Length: 334
Image 1 (cartoon, rainbow, N blue to C red):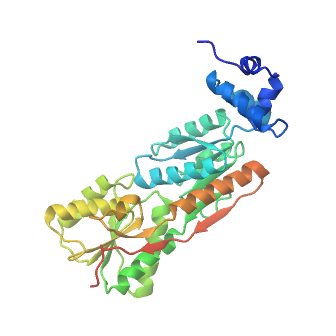
Image 2 (cartoon, helix red, strand yellow):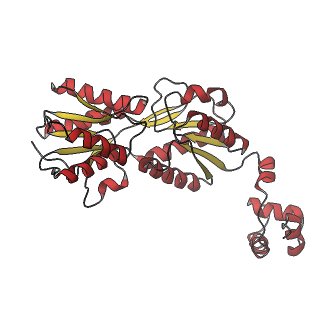
Image 3 (tube, one colour):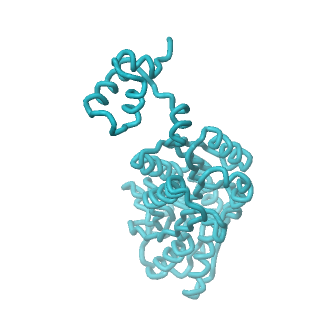
């Protein structure tokens, strides 16, 4: 079938090419009645605007790139949902890509986004090295990192205060009378997990506790890996009364492993998570957790990026959002 062009629409509507163009761009130079009539003709003829051509004229595609390390991660998928909603509310669409936590693939996707002429990119980095890998390309398109605290890196990022969040978690468990608190899922190769571990250790020093770690030997956090680690952990003598899981997905894996061996949570072991993903609040789970404000993370990330895009701002912005503790029923007083 022949593609319908803007000239075909103009002929069918009995107006000029420029009038159709103004109707499609929302120009106030034509009346509402004329615009509605032209848009109706477009609909009847199944006309699809040539976004590439329009972008060349308008110097904007109204597209934002979003690169995630793993769309199968519940936190990442929920964050993507909120970013998409925030972008659409501001008149932009999202192109979503998955880097699979591979630095080479992440760089290829970044180049792909630039080739698609996106107005800006939001990136959840796959590793702390992502900044250095992408550094040669960052001056080609406005970019905001989200979800990973890059500390003093001179690029815009939005993150939660992971140290503060971990401190809050230990403080809460300490207030319930727990003195043997195991930090579960400490993972190397991640700024986020390093900061959470630092916050845990800081709280232990503050309250006179001995830090206890169960290390995540896998490349990422997930229910599956949390379950496998918990099975190994529960096969050993239990010398702790509470577990502070580094992520909610790890905590869900712990719940699964505990149920298999008949370990009652919270009656025999208190469990605290971090992130507050959707599943954490389900009735049979009711996980007490430290919340990352995902909707706020998404909103601020989109605002910071569009500020750079629309106002052509130079420099960078570091935004650190405060976590909060969501109390449910997975922890009991010691």
